[in-house]
Length: 105
Image (tube, rainbow, N blue to C red; front, side):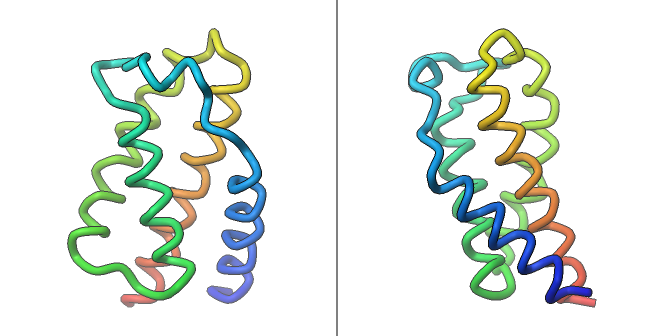
C-alpha cells in the first residue's frame, strides 16, 4: 500500500514540477503568509518524502504548514490558476504526511 501511494505522490510531484509559481503570489500574502515560503517549504518536504523518511524538522514543517495552507486556500479562490496550484501543493503535502506517518509505524 505504501508503494502505491509513493508512486501516486511521485506522479503528482512530476505534474507539479511542470507548473509555474503563480506570479501574483510573489507579493500577495493571504492571511499574512508568504506564499513563496509556503511553496518552498512544503515542496521541499514532499521531495524529501519521495526520497525517504523525514527528519524531525521537516516533519514539523509539514505538520504545521499543511493545515495552514488549507486555511488559506479559500482566500485565494479569486485566482483560478493559483487556486489550482496551491490545491495541488496541499494534496501532495497531505499525501506526503500520510506516507511519512505510515513509514514510521
